[in-house]
Image 1 (cartoon, rainbow, N blue to C red):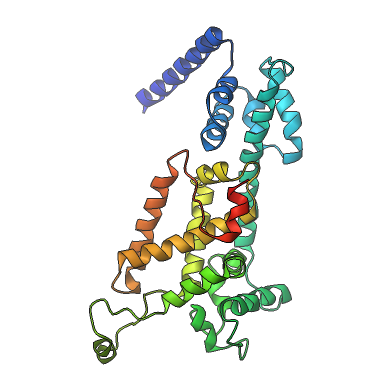
Image 2: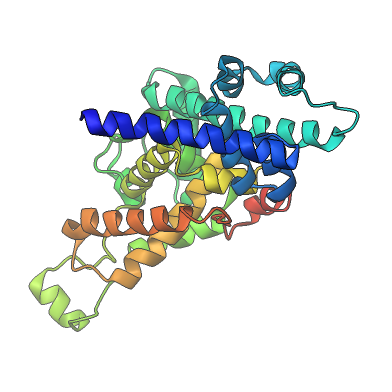
Length: 320
């Protein structure tokens, strides 16, 4: 333990000395070198974030935690602290502002998503009920819901006759994501739902399936999987893994819309992945999900990675 501590401080001191030497040789601080030598996007923003957090200056460390309306003042403070003339280096302030908007926006997005996750579904709340009924209408426009409490909910993948109990794990966040998917990418959402209910005769004939009374579906309940994929997206967000994607997709602060569109992408990709894996039944769900999760983490390690969705609702975001 003592050796590890000594090694840590040795490396830290060595790194600071190296930064000092490079600044003397180039005439530029680390923030300048990053902005001038790294193209905009995740590669630049993540380096700026690491540099600010690792600074020995408390003012620089706290700059990643300011409110959005304080970013311009924070940029001025950074320029003053680093003794950089904004008139000679006008582009630096613009680049730093873009990076801080993303960094601060990501932190605020986590807070917004967490708030939705913690808010439980309330059947006495008219807005909650309205959203739930909208989900049904978007997915089953030609099949009127006969009653609020009904076995019909199982047709879109809920476990029982009242969906409110299925939202306990992810709160309103699960409902928000499902409604967004169904409302803005209706055709794809309906197709995924339909696919999840189609017979699977990969090993048996239809007659053999019926005789053996096996599960004839591709293998999962749409709504329950949607809530589960919401959990996956939430964990990717909180762990910081989605920084790569959002810093490449959102030119400024990532928003809840970006998160919901990412959910749509994950639903679509998981559906394809599930079919490719060809699991025997739903009991293999956790294995397939974990494999899918590991694949995403590997993709997101690439600083140029963007989980470009294949949906119409994404086009305006990706092209910004």
